[in-house]
Amino acid sequence: MDLQQIDQFAKSIIFEASSRIREAFSYNLVIETKSNANDLVTNIDRETELFFIEKIRAFDPTHKIFREEGMGEKVESLEGVVWIIDPIDGTMNFVKQHRHFMISIGIFINGVGKLGYIFDVMRGDLFYAIAGEGAWYNDSPLRKLQPVKIEESVVGINAHWVAPNRHIHHEKVIEMVRKVRGTRSYGSAAMEIAFVVSGKLDAYVSMRLSPWDIAGGTIIANEVGAVATNLHGEDFDFLHQDTFIIANPSIHKELLEKYIVPYE
Ligand code: 2AM
Ligand code: CA
Ligand code: CA
Ligand code: CA
Image (cartoon, rainbow, N blue to C red; front, side):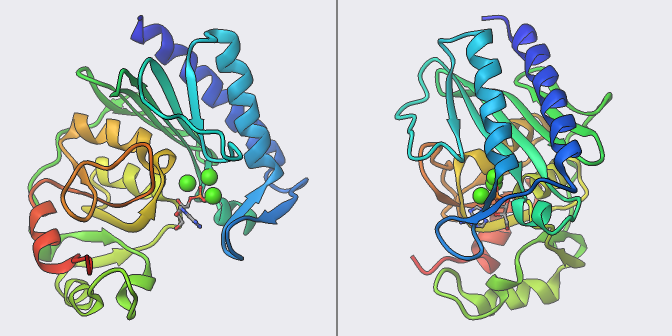
């Protein structure tokens, strides 16, 4: 299996898909809701995903594809070559004509993350990694993350988790908000992960993400030393939804022990 060849192909279809999305950005949106009123999908999410499927099948029909808008179609294992794709991460931003949305792709070979991509569609910026070879932001190598103290860190977290909720001890989250230098919420998990791996954020936390939200990002994380786990400190389960934290290695443990504490 030639990783360089798959990498070149993946980049080419990401660039092509993104130019199609940019063309559609300001018109042609058909918006539907899924599991609830805030869970949106557009015709462009679906069309972009179908574009990827068509291209990947033509490239190599043995590759499996695990994707967000797959209508219940499931990948039961990560054996072989598996693409995990989120065609638009940040659909609500996309619908609101807000430029924070990403294409997110992770490619696994026999369960091991090998190639990761997060593409900022409107800015044309690519964060990517080849396992064992490094990670890049466009043409510049991403450096290993440098240690940071909690009180100097900036954390990506949704305001939901600062209010009483049934997932985590919100009073501890309030303590964290007071302790850290700042918090941010961009509305695209892949974008927040891209910011953590490039040192623009020091951590990002979410109560419920799916494999396609984080697949590309965790492969990039491995190359820069960012630590990605669920909120129990275990490996994220790539076949299901799970809680998620990605952080600078110097604060990951402290965040989980003191501030981001799930009820069970
Ligand atoms: P999406 O835009 O691909 O749906 C929004 O805070 C972030 O959480 C986005 O990255 C969004 O991905 C993701 N997300 C995951 N599950 C979601 C859900 N059920 N409803 C809304 N956003 C969800
Ligand atoms: Ca979605
Ligand atoms: Ca997503
Ligand atoms: Ca999506």
